[in-house]
Image (cartoon, rainbow, N blue to C red; front, side):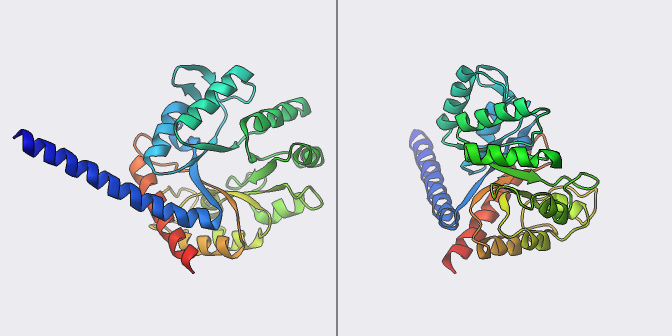
Length: 285
């Protein structure tokens, strides 16, 4: 009996090892394409940030986007507010690193004053962020252009569904005309579908301006649509990924899964596996 238990345990460990090798191999395709597959922590907003990191790792992803207001957890007091002090920032960064993850962006956040915007950029610099995801007032874009260039950090303007201001790429393109090239789009492909737009055409229209993606697939084309594992819905995700490659997009691709809130790790894991597989195919072409 003891021998059987030992054999079973060794077999299970070997199986886990094989699965790990396959996942690592698939992620080489993503790396070759210059994509950073991770999770927007909002996917796990019913949990602490610490727990969100655990779940991101469980889904097989390497990057994370933080959102404001989530309890930090893991023995650290406070929330993921960008006003956190230097000591808390250091603890949070260590927590992320200890999970084997990299923090790449923060949002969606819209500070209410120029002083707060400056503090946000200071926070982003201290945390080593590439992008700040926001839906800023158009009047603030000249000021944000200067901050982006000064700090060498991007503003990725997000598209919530209509009637939010930036729901249509045409509105975004008009708003950023003449702005710093560091101001572009956070392409939420699910919200475009909810607004009655074709996400593939939106990605094509924003060529050269996309700083990151909030990735989704939806069960139907309607404002009430909900998330489903990538590749099983109406968003034509494989074609969007092919267009990303054609555009030579480089940057974060954050899973923002807004369904099955209490237990969405299986769905997000399926999504990540699909993305890995498709990226591997594209990298070989």
